[in-house]
Image 1 (tube, rainbow, N blue to C red):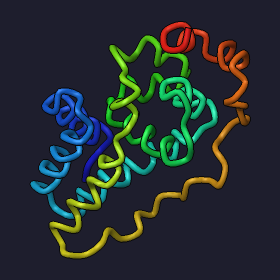
Image 2 (image 1 turned 45 degrees about the vertical axis):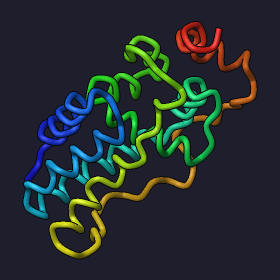
Image 3 (image 1 turned 120 degrees about the vertical axis):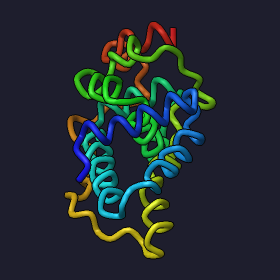
Image 4 (image 1 turned 90 degrees about the horizontal axis):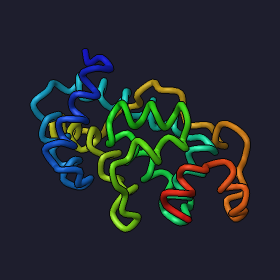
Length: 173
């Protein structure tokens, strides 16, 4: 059984060993998960999915829009994987207030940052390698049809500057 601390330890260790590279981080997560039993890999997948769904929020989408200079559905999905990959402190801080990402991120390159799609599939890949079967249903409530919170007009730069003043000052001004 993997608890939340164990989940974050795997994420953090892989990120540190990958020197922040999200593709390498995903490979290292798969490598680590392959050393565990299939049920523990499913626990990791559940922890990841719960956090991925928690981050399905309009305000976080606005922060992604700011950091990436635009973010459609797929880019926001990948951003949420990337956000989890940054670790517990960054993830939880962004959930408290997405504008805090201005202070939580050491640096951010919109070309390579914010995209960690492979990390979202790491547990599936490990489970399939271990069992030869696809990942079963995890029993996690599905992502809602619409993000949580109030919609944000991403095209309204004045609104974005007001809603995310620190992100605006650091990444857009």
